[in-house]
Length: 368
Image 1: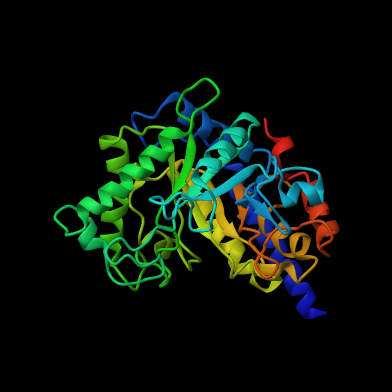
Image 2: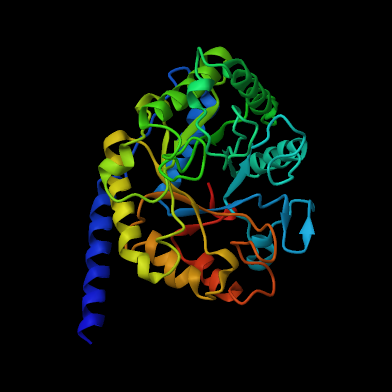
């Protein structure tokens, strides 16, 4: 009984702190970091910050490319099949940009078509980048140090610039129905405070990482004249404000603050840590006038059939005003042993529909 009362007090205190923080954040007017940002990029930022006042948008990686038991259907997603509505945010990955298909065998040409339709329907496109280790030819998880070779003066600098040229070509291929550059969100070099990528903590210093991030943004802006992108900084789980900002490349290079959190959002046991992270991001969002997101999360195979309402929902919503999280993105439905969103027939479908019907969760039909 005492333990139950203590948990209630923790939850109530966390809700109060989040609610108070958000009251100071509802008038957030974020500006795009790119001083030459196109009107379309500014409008996308305005849409993101305005939706924050309503609730949290739900996103899903590779939602249109495949699902459990199907592939490349006509604007189909497992989430819509299960719940009757589409995600509001659609995640894609640009890893292996030199090939015709990405790291998850998604065709880049079809990705362009799907992203265009997402934009036409009012959704948001966000791109991660699991690129190969350009210094070795290995994959993203080849942690051989590489960054010094990629920066100006390095042996692989020209090869890196050629990859950035391909990125620019892809982003330039995305057009609005009016033929203008399509505004999208770009999330390069994520989870740098983890030791599993070549741009991560086991392979480089914070200063090297910042130099890589800054060079990438400057090259796309200044050399390739891309001014339709919003950039995300997204570490893995963190313990403090100082921990979060260790790798931060600077306000001039970041538009959206993010965190990838599978650990704390795996079960109700991580609730307090998840809410502490959100509280820190709320403070930074207010100080820097930048929206924040949970850029990746999920519970692989959803063996907890109540995960959406008992773990995710209480972490990202509050009893009164929205928490200020712009969106939370579930990872992909790749295989029957590797999926993060519901599909018809799964035991969590009813729970997910309850999650969808909460007034602070936003799907595609809820967007302005």
